[in-house]
Image (tube, rainbow, N blue to C red; front, side, top):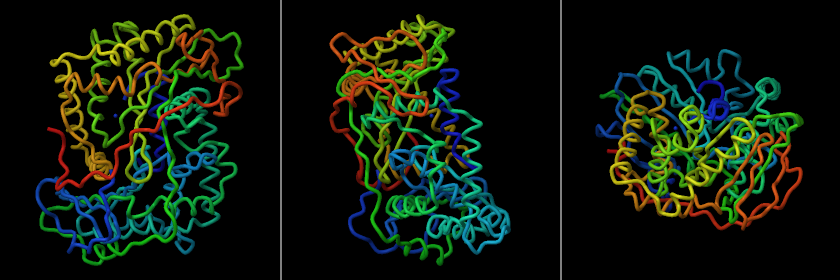
Length: 495
């Protein structure tokens, strides 16, 4: 996670390149008084809220070290429409320090000086930083996190160097039409009427100024949108001055204006323009908005995703064949905004010769339509899918840094853990994955077509994610967003 969360978009591109698969804010009525020292409490993680509005999650350390994460809910959906990737760039820019820092006083050097390490993250759900080091270094490491969030001044010369390096990296990686396909699928599936890039784009990096980053940062890096995750060895407590500093943290000015994703009405077809008229192979995506983190139907879509991907002889394998099954594994792109609202996009990619792609994609859309129409899993299949999810999450929780990240995600989005029955999975599919909710995106010349009763025209996009031709964005209905749920006394893994 160090350096850049470009791992998030790189991971998605890796999944699409091989077409393979991958992984609410607490209500804040008023400002309750700050609790006493952030002492380590029971064995299970517990949460409480500071006077600043910051949610605190406390968990015991298993390896005798101190670790902490300061995370904010949000990502690409919080980026201005004309500045995709601005949130992620801001996370990296904060690591530049202040105008007065010599090279040995930059954030990474400060962490190393006390025996610690510093990582950054921006994965679509959350953004921020994680630190880890000796328990005796808790105070300076906590101070470092707060400085990163509250006082970045973005030295002009260092900022220009960062932007230039990031722009060069984007050029070298060449996300091209594949990355554009993901962006178009995500943006149109959420009814935004535009592509939704998941990382900084070259166009944004060519026009961004440090003032853009500072202005955006003040709107998104706010205590009421964040969570502080703590892990300390038994017998150690967070210093009182760190407790007071976080409790008194305030950010003046307005918060970010929120986007309004929605559910499209009518299946839509999108094509990424290709200059190679002789191209015989294509990659296509089928995408649909899906329940996000914190939605009561979240476990239903995860169970359906797991069941669809089962191998050998799983539903998708029976549609596309054993050789293509791994490359057509569906995956959930989790996105958050506003500090605690979440939505996901369920994406499935297929590839091959142009004629094969059309047949395979139709097979996938028919499979989703069957689930929406009531052809649901059996009780045994639903239970097996949920057990697989539980096992995967437990393994992730054991990893020190990933475990911290998961605790922060739970504190911000409050996922509802339950084992969904087949009927619940059917109801979810009928609401979210019906044919009139689907977005089809093709990179190449596969001859795709829409249902006869839907729009007959396709929308064409250039490789930069700009709409070239085609109908206006599809009609849509408000997204059933779940947020600001009641707080829980403890945060525990699924059982």
